[in-house]
Amino acid sequence: MRIFKKILVPVDGSLYSLNAARLAAEIAEIHGSDLKLFHVLDVLMADQLKSLLKKNSGSIREELKSQAQGFLKDMVREIGKHKVNLEVLIEEGIPHEAIIKEAASWGADLVVLGKLGRRGISHIVLGSVAERVIEFSEMPVLVVK
Image (cartoon, rainbow, N blue to C red; front, top):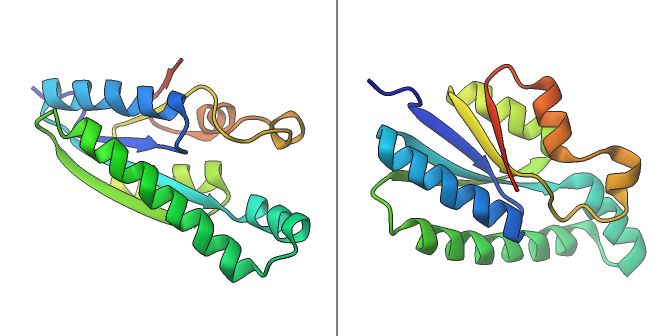
């Protein structure tokens, strides 16, 4: 009996999200689950960087996407040690909203994410992505330190 058929792992390239991906891969291998690494290009952060760096939003988004592709490639290599069906997805949006939407539309049974990520000073003002996912998610959320 598979308890978790689909496990969504929101990642941001931090060590915390790598630890979450590793644990999710172990769980997926044990349960025979599908695993999806999901990165959200934070549109609010991109707008802040645009003002700060004096670049256009297209180039900022391309740089963020390129960085995401780099760390996702490393995570896929790390997770490749486990026998799991793995999918990778990058989307733009507000992280906690996009995570909850993707989990629901994909039919995830579990969301596994790192406790802390790369939100910087905006974390103090906006609250963490993990806290918001926990608050608004209708499926179980496992938070990894």
